[in-house]
Each structure stands twice: as structure tokens, then as C-alpha cells.
Length: 378
Image (cartoon, rainbow, N blue to C red; front, top):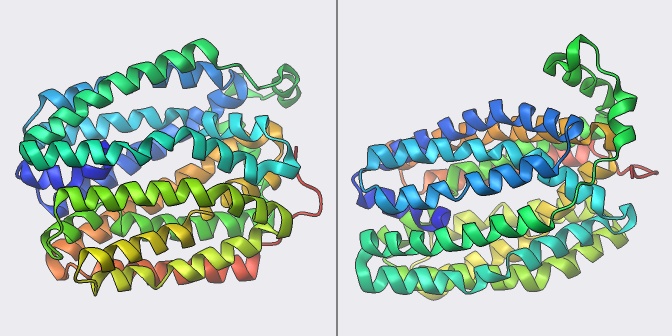
């Protein structure tokens, strides 16, 4: 929820859209350098240690957001929070390790749905707090709520999470040069099939598209369409509810009838919706468009992740996932910069048109370069 309401809160502290985009870009660049370390550690030292450490590290930032009210300090803290992305490759690798290949999409979707069910209720809490206390005090009150939930989450991870990396995976690799990062990632290029390369490129454009608009939905909705914080919270809550209902059936369809087909339909359906968002003039219109974005896009994440896992050997999964996330971070950084600049200096609608163009480019790479494997990696 901090991420949902942070853009508008940041502007209320005195920041601007261009600075917001710059923060997003710097955070993505920091993430770029953290991810190879995370992928290396996930494949050689195990997934669990990283996940437990970053879970407790994550408690610090809701606390800092709660006590800080200067936009410059807020920006610095937001960048340091990105160091927690070290756990990204370990998390994805652990999930891929734990789900049978024939049910990988539905398994990933089920995990995402059940772990995100509280997000159906949380926006109402935040919206009510902001509506009654104002953007500054309401956001801080929400951060206090997040401190508690982050602490509970870290305890659960620390107590119950089990390691999934098999010991023989690390012994087979036999990296030279004292297990250096360079030696570890030099093996990755030999494991990248044509389909995997095209899938990565398509992913970069999807991340670029979302990076250009992700932080500006709430600003555009509240400033230009004049929705209240509570109205926006209702939209966010219904989005999470729709995602929870639709994600698992959609993932089952992807496992049954083909992941590539689902990705193609998702991209083609999402592309025009941000343009419709910019021509919306009421709560009802915005609600319909934002729900359609969920309906069209909710299958992309788990299906994309599952197809990547199908194409990636287990022993290389942490590092290839890290590479995947690194190029995604570059796409996010570029998208944040482009979106912030367009939103601040050109026109507030232009980033949403940019989204459409980037999605269509991703669609081309998916059509031309990606084929599902005849034999899935376990």
C-alpha cells in the first residue's frame, strides 16, 4: 500500500513528477547492481538465508516513512529500500523449485493470490485514513499499520521457510576463479535459447511501458479526473479482488492451452486501455478501465514467470532470473525517466500513449521469437 499511495504523498511533501521519475530510475539502477549478487547467492548459498535477511531488513522502511516528512529524505530512503531487491532472484527461484512443471503457472498464480488477499481490504483502510486525516497524517498512519504487518511477515518467513536448493546443484557447477560473479554469470549466455532471449526482450518493453505510467495513475486520477482518495482506494481494492478471483482460472488456462497464447492475448488487450484511462471523466469510467486492465493483464505475470522457468535449467535458475530482473530494472529505470519527463514537461496524457506503443513492440517480439519448449525444465 505504501507504493500505491506514495506518488501522491510525495507531491504533497513538495516533490514533483519529474523528481518522482528520477527516484524510480535511480532505484531501478540500484536494483540492477543488486540482482546479480542475489542470483549468485541464490544458486550457491541457498534461497532461504537471503529471504529471511531481506524480510527483516524490510521492516526498517515503513518506520522511516512514518517519521520522515521531508521529500528529499523520503527520496533517499526510497532508494535505500531498493536494496531489498537482493531477494528477488531467490524468491522466484524458490517458487519455481517448489511447483511441479506441469502445474507451474497455476501454482505460481495460487501463491500470488493467497499471499495478496489482504490487499483486497487494505486500500479501504488507507483510503479511510487519508480521507479523514489528510494526505500527510493519513499516509503516516498507514505506514504505522505497515510496520506491524512487515514484522509479522518477517517472523513467518524466519520460522517456517524451508530451503529448496538441492546440494548437488551447487557441486555440479564447479565454478572457477573462487566462485567469482564473472565466472558464475559467464555460464548464463550458454543457457539462453532464442525463445528465452526474445521473451526477455519482450519483458523489457512491458516493464518499460509500466514504468512510464505506474506512478502516475493516482496523480492523474486525483488531479485531472478529480477522484477522492477514498474513490481511488475503492478502485484499487476492486482491482485486487478481481485479480484474486481471475488469476488462478487464467493460470489454469495457460497451463492447459499454452502460455504463449495467453501472453499474446494479454498484451494485445492491455495496449489500448491506458488511452481509454486518459479520456475517462468520472469515477465509473475510471473504475471500468482500471478493472479491464486487471482482467487483461493479470495473467501476464505468472504466465511469463512460468514460461521463463520452463525454458531455464534449475541449476542456472537463480542467475538467469537475476539477469532477467537486471534487464527489467534497466527497462523500469528508462520507463520511470521517460514517464516522469513526459508527465512533467510535455503533457500528462503522453506517458499513457507511450505505454500503448511499448506494449505493441513487446507483442512483436513475442510473436516472432518465442516458442514454448517441447520438454519443460524441472
